Length: 410
Length: 142
Image: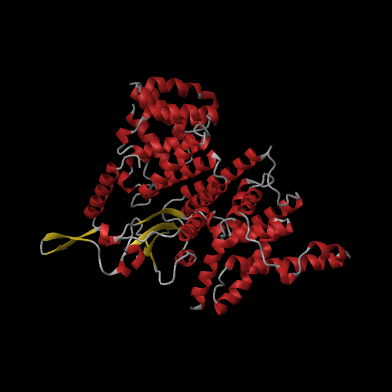
């Protein structure tokens, strides 16, 4: 094995083992930042030794043992300095006796909860999750999020410090906060997914790869909390959205909208997985939860072989549910579009008009309203709406498009 | 990156010898580990080649050859589709599978959209698309 090949093999093992190694250490040192540092030290040792010795039979156990020895040595040193060595003798195992129990899945779940702890801002939660749960390097995370590597390194260091200062430790969330903490983990996974989904063709491939990372995290999470419907709902949503990725960019790199996409290029494997995951979320009683409802909307599109076959009344009904469980003006606007397709422009216009005061600066509101007025045969009003929308958007290409629509409606 | 991992046939799989309870348990635990790691997209086992057939294209007419087929080591007995970050990673995962002595697993990356490059004419690309749409039509909602 060349040293380059050995290096890549060690990195592959790290991707597989990072979460379990860090989680096992966090259980010992009760500080995930420190656990991650110790695990990184063990990785450096592996990179030095494995190219010579080959990859051990149980690489995860090897990494954890090396890191634990260092942790115990460090704790001893600190305790000695503090004059508490007698106390330690009873609590810590002998360095030579660190044959580990296999890390329990519960540790990985705790690690996820800790990385997504509410004392951290979402972008810090996402960075820590990719670093500790997905085993990405700081450089890879920086490239994926389009920030310089030192900036990302600093973000990660600060996040670890915040967790230590808040004395977050490594405890699972209590029953009273479980739902909120799980919601925060789901939100981080979806944030990572959207970061990848919004990447355009030609961008660094690490950005679209974030979709794969997010789905992998979503699958890990769904396996850890198999009875939580929203874990399956989110995974289904991501898989159904990602099924369209191959059809989503044209040869020139421009985004192709859902209705112009070549549906033959949709990824059938992801669609079948997404539909199965959605069914599972519904069986678990989560059919009306926000991610599952969005997945159900994506599923209606996935089932339509042509745009004309789209079941708009079903989509409009699902948006009505979403507007109830996750109300927002943007959801209402999407609902109006679905209603216009299902019941015609007049019904939709009523919904849009009800939004008037709540989406002031959002260019899609006048743009949708313009479309509805065109369909209702009111071109002069439509023109004014398109002009208003053009004035609100910061995107030059979009502005040109809207001004062209304004001219056509005169 | 997606990989097809094929478990090769053995004399036992070809003879229709079913796995023992222990083997099933070990394989179940392995598959469970792949699923828990978030990388297992699909998997399945194949019946012996005696239950299958081949269609050979030569001399203008397709010829049907019924199984079984002799070259056991070239036959496939099971498959998994894994989505991982690198070839090295899929190899490390496969090295952990609980295979008996003499078994062999073959790892092949799947083509991804656009991999055919300029060899694929626009007409072929369109035909490929029609084909996929037709296949999708046969399995609505799946």
